Image (cartoon, rainbow, N blue to C red; front, side, top):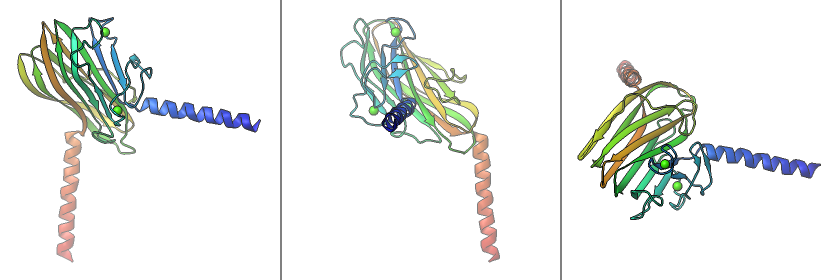
Length: 252
Ligand SMILES: [Ca+2]
Ligand SMILES: [Ca+2]
């Protein structure tokens, strides 16, 4: 009986640990919308995991082959198509997050692409991470999205914030945009999200469309920052503190 309990406890612990680690991972996905279905990613990679890990986009298709760098995913097909039949060649695609980049309260997810296509097509990329956590701190938050690069096609950017802390959780927030090439671009979008007080997830989506053989590169960063109102309050409190210290020093 006791032995059976120990086995049960061990299995329960494995289940809990598995659930926690699956929930906390950075995920990078690439969808050639002409392959299979649009919205069905051909490449899904979970940080620190082998192919077959469960995600809301389906099972991951590739191992995270970056030498187990935590908070980093690196994917490349070199000069080969992304998948058989695809017009997209991924020289490099990367996703970055904590603990490699940013921190828990003010989370950052970052995505990098250097890709070419041999014909017209659309490539949709997502990077998501969960378990950013103010840990008892409540603040008025906003997202800043920075994206820069070069394109001979069109690049559009969307950002998600999810207070439910789900992978790919929430829906695209208003306030982002797109650019059309040929162009070198550098865009910054400010997106209010309101009060942040519990664990949250961040997701960024970039859609690249080429009308023929072309190349696109970008680095897209999405980060949580205190809302300007919060910064004003913090700054005011800071100035008040300095004034108080000065008065106390003068009095003594
Ligand atoms: Ca697809
Ligand atoms: Ca990794």
